Image (cartoon, rainbow, N blue to C red; front, side, top):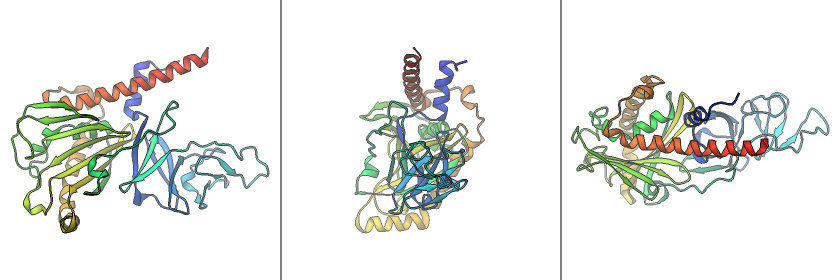
Amino acid sequence: MAEPHEETVERLVAHGVRNFWYPVAPSWMVHAAPTGVTRLTERIVLWRDKDGAAHALEDRCPHRGARLSLGWNLGDRVACWYHGIEIGPDGTVLRVPAQTACPLEGERAVKSYPVRESHGAIFLWFGDRFHEEPAPLEFPEELASPEWSSFLCTAHWKCNYRYAIDNVMDPMHGAYLHARSHSMAMGDKTAVMRIAPTDTGFMFEKVGQRDVNFDWTEWGETGAPWMRLSIPYRKDAGPGGTFYIVGFVTPVDEHNCRVFFWRCRKVAGWQRDAWRFLYKTRLEGLHWEVLEQDRAVLEAMAADAREHEFLYQHDTGLSRVRRRLHQLAEEQVTALSRANSVAAK
């Protein structure tokens, strides 16, 4: 019996909508030895070829289903530990050493993922059957422009990815949860919020307060869904302009996610060197404290907390993103359902 349409849509939203690029691992995590990860509920093996280029395949040998991440890197292919089946970067079976002229050889039997490595992270394209070719991936100015300097912070959170998105789309929590932070101790604890459209999404901001606390956040879609915010720095945080965060959240499964936060500052020359030194020696630990506060609250929430909410005006931003994700999932499920109906006739 087919799953009801709305349940299919909700499951897709919970696991991660398709037709986007998602960061799946920091670059340092992917090396020559095959590495297994789960992203958007899919098991994936990541590895680098002899030239250092990153590749991603479905983490499943087409012979008996063993995980390729347990196998070996042969330079231009990976080999399954179980029976030595060799798989190329595009998912084609290149060699079956245990049998001569095996019909499996030459078959593209394993799913491969388009890969882009940028800004210290590995991005994969998760397209549905109608969007196997990846869309262009454009980054916000803080990552795209050489005038900016950044550090990537990434962590595994034991909560559904939507909780992490809700957290970033909620500027008001900074004045409470992070009230003793080095950068979010100032400003009003009450506010009126508003939404302003942008070319790539929308801005959710406090009315009448800017550059005091965590006063605004932005949702954007440029081949990947991302969020952006700024937090003013005190003078003892070093030279340069306002501190920005560009964030991506990648689903792992229904109950886990991986957050990727680039901490960015527009600095050049000696100021860039000074800030990067100060960040590593003093500021990074303070930023991790803030991130841990977010993680502690979100991981302690019940898995069904969203079903028992009483939202108010400060939650308009996260409500807008929720509707957007549901809209995308609805479109993707409907397209697939129509295609299946035509094929069945």
